[in-house]
Length: 116
Length: 113
Image 1 (tube, each protein chain N blue to C red):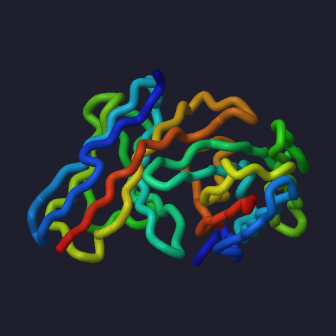
Image 2 (cartoon, rainbow over the protein chains, first blue to last red; image 1 turned 180 degrees about the vertical axis):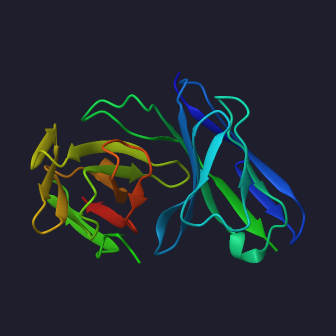
């Protein structure tokens, strides 16, 4: 089954304690991305990757890091989490060989992060 | 600077009637538009898309209309069903594909029996 998986699904942590949210896709997609969803703001892109070892900042990259050492994995790293990073996080992936009317990003189930 | 806007946070429609969700954008470079549907505790799932060379795309009960001059798109659901109750996000891309998407704030649609 084609899917994007994220772990953990729920996480409560304290300010300053480094954490990693993992993301993995089994569709051999080149493109992967991280979003955060906040009330009234929709989904905002944090970082994205066009392929292995190619990453770039999205619209809200401050306080986050990513890496893309393998095609299937795209972990999100919070080196020193702060309360304003409390949010719902989604990982997504997409093929770069998109076909009109079917090209889309596939989303993981989300990770709800609370930073105290 | 919100480049993609969904000005209605919520919409309530009676079962069997038409649901119309609206989305406006400001960036004239956007050339590919998508609608996603999101249930609680799940990730968004793709619903329907349209490229800027078209003004309408239809898939079963779902139709997306694009008005490039007004920088406006809408999603029509006919007839509306209880299972359509969800949050709907519109998204836009300037790459001609589904990469580097910019999302709207979302509209919560409730279908009443």
